[in-house]
Image (cartoon, rainbow, N blue to C red; front, side):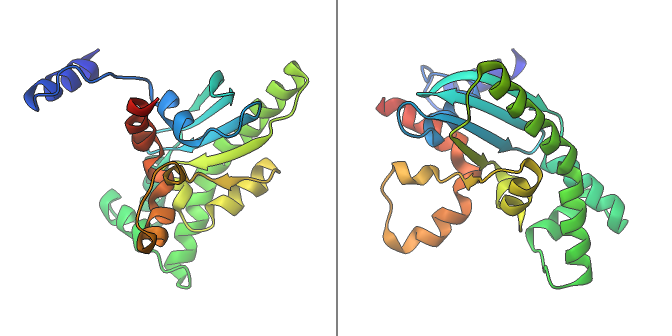
Length: 200
């Protein structure tokens, strides 16, 4: 409620008081959901948590949240390198994967997410067993989805083929921005999905 009140006060101060609000899962599904009749599982590797959303035809069927995210990974990197949180975050963002420190950062980042991804795998399997069906498509999004080697690591731990979320395929942009849009897409899935709400 405090967050919602702060948001409403912010919107009033910008002369946009009547903007709708929604839970982020609906925004991310709007941005990343696939074709009609397809069951999609979205793994949002966010800053404070890893979230699993399962939907069909854009309708949310299951949510599962694990309190492990990019911030926890950064904290573990800080402990591994005996540095501050800010320095560890900088190491993540300016990663030299060929250096010794870079390899330690990558290894620690993966270790931070491993337990969460194992739990995601269990939830997916339980969902499929209880509903007697298969998830058609698995998508990762969120800031940590763009970290070096993360898509391959998620696929390895979960044991399934995954795709990296590409929300900007739903909007037009200049061709020269293709590389940038591909790189930042997973981080902007929630924001873009919220923006697309006005066009439904």
